[in-house]
Length: 171
Image 1 (cartoon, rainbow, N blue to C red):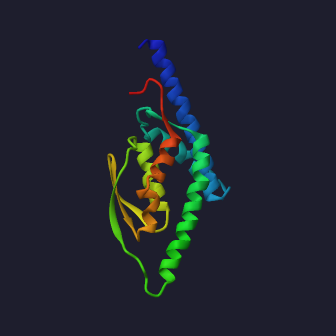
Image 2: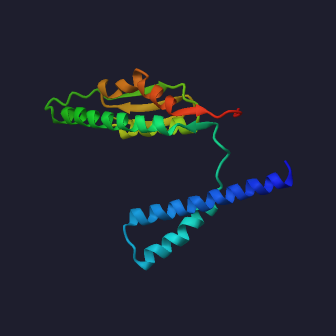
Image 3: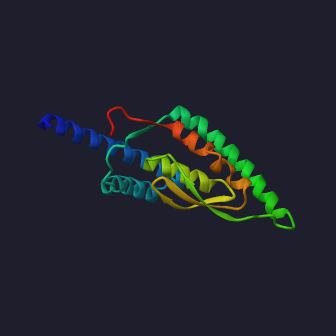
């Protein structure tokens, strides 16, 4: 690697950290919903410090397809709403017809990013929670068989896999 290329990579890393600091600052202002001097100054100090402390990681071998993610989010929200009604029905039924179970879900998703999206999607859906994540496997608690249906039929894995594609030249 030439010194010129190293300087370019360092400059790109610095630019990415500056963009990240501005993004974090914007998120800080948005979430604090306060424009007084103390909040603005605190955000202006904390955002760059967080970016400076964050070492970053190696570039991911996967690329997120934003179009596929935009198709996934409404589907996930629909599943969350449907599951919410199902869990409400379970809770409000006097006999409480639950059949709790722990499932070992084998997945073909490989990257950390894919596993995080899968685990979080499971946990966001009422009636299921991700208990443990290991490469190629998740331990999931489900209230009943209906709550685990999207997981056991492979729909969730397929939808998440469609959001990610391998980068060219990645190993």
